[in-house]
Picture 1 (cartoon, one colour):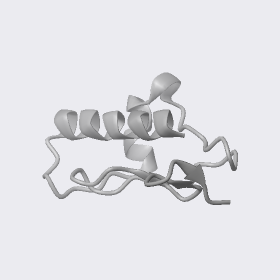
Picture 2 (cartoon, one colour):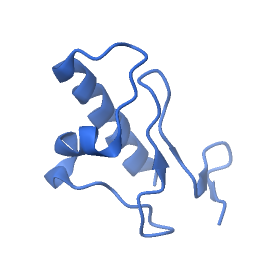
Picture 3 (cartoon, rainbow, N blue to C red):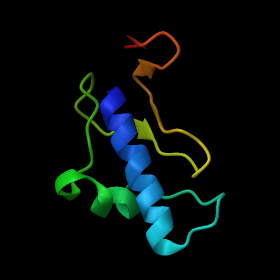
Picture 4 (cartoon, helix red, strand yellow):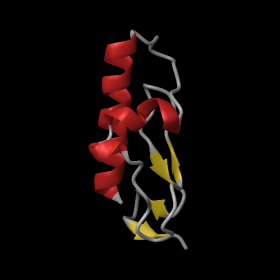
Length: 75
């Protein structure tokens, strides 16, 4: 899950560079998909779904099933 969050953040930053997006822009899943490995959205290993909140460019992405503070599943 942590690696998926890193991939999403990298894709988000690449999208911003290539599109000249403003610092407060918020891409959606479709916008960052071309910048992900094999152009496929990652799925949460706990739910087999895209349970990620991408957020704006200044905010780290999060997973609904993962507590980043404790590194534990919340399901």
